[in-house]
Structures are given as C-alpha cells and as structure tokens.
Image 1 (cartoon, rainbow, N blue to C red):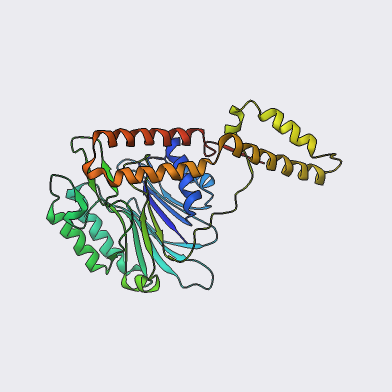
Image 2 (cartoon, helix red, strand yellow; image 1 turned 180 degrees about the horizontal axis):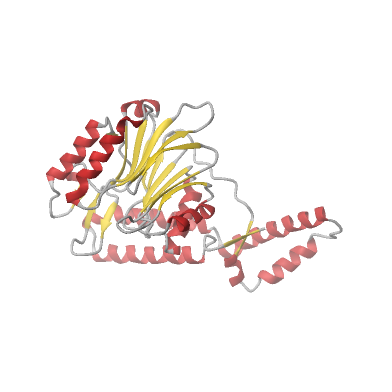
Length: 350
C-alpha cells in the first residue's frame, strides 16, 4: 500500500497534473498527498476523478493558505482525526481485519520565524491517537547541516527546534533512496540551494510493524520539490491497476486513425444485437491499441526512461558543468513534450 507526498507547487498547471497521473500509473499509490495546490477546495476535489482515487479531504487555497489535499483509494479505510491548513491527520486501515495505524501528512511553515508554531502543533496532536504513527510531507526544514547543499550554512537553532519536536513526539527519520535533496531552489536571490525538506518520520511502534518500509525520492521537472514515495512493504511488488481501454485524444493527430477504425469495425462482422455491438467495440479497441503501439510507441516507458536520465544528471549536479546543465534542460524539455502528446492529456471512456 504505497503512499505519495508531493509539494506540487500548484495543480492549475495541466502539465503537473499529467505528470502526477504518470506517477500514479508507475507506482500505484493508495494514498496521495499534495501541498501547495493553489486551488479552491472544489477544484482540488475534482482532481480525484483524474487520479482514480475516490476518497478526498482538502483545504483550499484562501488567503495565507496555499492549499493541501489527501486522496485515497476506496479499497482502504481512512478516518479523519483532524485537519487544518498545515496538516491532515487520519487513521488508516488497509482491510477490515488489519490493525489501524495513524498517518499525518504535513506542509510545514515556510517562514522561519513562525516555524515554531508548526512544531508546537505537532506536539499538541501527538496524544490524539495511540496507534503507530507515520508523518510524511514537506516539513520546510532540514534536520542536519549536511542535508543543506549551499555555500551558506543553515541556521543551527531552527534545525535544533525541528529535532527537538521529533524527539518529543517519538518520531524517527525513515531514511531514503534517490537524490540527497528534495528541494532545488532555482529561482530568486538564493539560487542553487538544494535541501532535504520532504521526508517521512515514524514512531518506534510504526517502525516495528513496518520493518522493511522504504522511502524513495522521485524526480519531476514540474516542481522544484521531489515527490516522495513510501513503500511500507519492501517485498510487496508494485502492481498497477488494470488499465481501462480508452479512446486517446492523441490518436486524432494521426491521419490513418479513421481508416483504421473503419477497417476494424468491418472486420468485426455482423452486428444484429447489443452483444454483437459490444464485442465489435472491444475488437475495434484491441486493433487501435495495437495500431497505437506501432504509431506512438509506449509513452509510459518513454517517460520512465526520461525520468531516470533526469535523476542521473541531477545526482551528478554537485559538479555540474555547462554541458550537463544543457543536457538537463534538453531532457526536461523532451519530458514536457512527451507529457503534452501523451495519453495523460485527455481521455474518453469507451
């Protein structure tokens, strides 16, 4: 039962939504938390139909709030403990017979001078449940100086406050694989500041129950934050949901689409009843899928390949040459182009 948390920096951008959909298909998370959605609660909740996750809790963007949202699959039970503009606190039960555990998704205070209020909030809510506790998201703070990749050092006091809160709440860092940072500030006056702000921490009882849990820093060119993926069961293979056959809008860019449909429809034979029509539609879709592979290839595999290349280049970023930077820009541009023409743009169910 995988969980994904991402400071997406706005879901109003269709490119971001398409990449989120691609991540969903690759990793099949049952829980998805988004921070900095920058959309109203109504618009955020409409996103659940694109993600295929029917459960949703959201705090819309309003005033000082930038918006957070939690989506979950109907196969698991999620019960709300409490929520505000900074966190969504729930109990998770993976099946009717499974023991429950607590999961809190957070979006930390971005202002250093106000960050202590976030830590005080965490301390206040720690006793609201006795279940094993996992906390995941963008804390907007590093734990140690080595997590801050910059010529300018990070304030020791602010990191000490973060460590103190985790100790008081019996929360321990779960570690990670992938890039050593999760936020890459390429804008503003403080350029090239890379820092590990996004993480998963858990209580001792949660770590005992999920001994093989893993956290992976994923890569996306659509935000300056990495999506982070939690796999509570390391030996549990990622199995994607069965894909529904859909008519892809991108097919209409190919002139041979019309003749392909006409030929497949004729080959389906006579259609004297509703059953014949249903069978014929399935045959047409099967023909179109085969035709699509020939004309467009595998968009999903291409995106995964480009994502891997981007991660490799970003991993070598510490001594990044101008040629490597150009390669990163070229791969990012190619990634965005593939998203634009891929099947995540729009789909019509058949």
